[in-house]
Image (cartoon, rainbow, N blue to C red; front, side, top):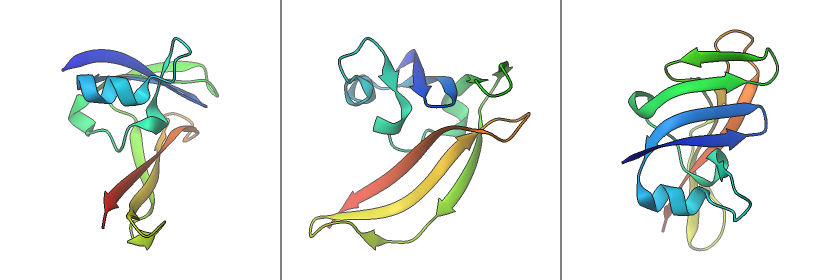
Length: 103
């Protein structure tokens, strides 16, 4: 596990992630992105920052689950869960996440 800063449209989260997750989150632009990693465990999130209220917090962001149903995306892929990481202070979205499984 390595501690990395992961960027989202509304801020960032610092979390312990695996080398495989680092590779997934790297889009080749010098930053790692949260959306490319499936749902982060709360205990692995160390800090988060919200652009909307310009605040940094120790500990995990809040997780808001939007959907938790098995939706077929393609013949081989199922969307298991969709949600957001949100700010503790203003409830603005920091980033979205999606959890998939293969058929």
